[in-house]
Length: 159
Image (tube, rainbow, N blue to C red; front, side):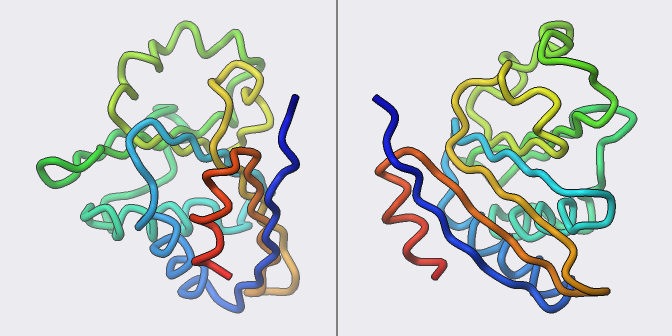
């Protein structure tokens, strides 16, 4: 039986607001969490990841979209999970994940996947799904969705 999803609708009025949302999300992420990001080009996916990185003690200036390398790994301070940031834009299907050795490199990490719709069925069940949509030049509509009841408490802090 699949639990009813916990859904939270938010709005961002600027790239800085999107980064701040990423920071708020990053404060409650734990090793093993998988975050799936969906949104068209320029929707703010990498901007959100920079906020997550800042919350995890990682310099957000080091974070860039891993479009050509597929996965960037960022070490966090001792005792914290590292951040594995994946861009699935160039992947054709979930089967392409097998060649990456993703399971080994993301053990003990928070995994964030941009363009997740291309590979989501090949990943462990996601803990959090985030959709970002343009709503004007700098405004974004952001929807957070989680199916695990434990996430209800985590997401309540963002509302």
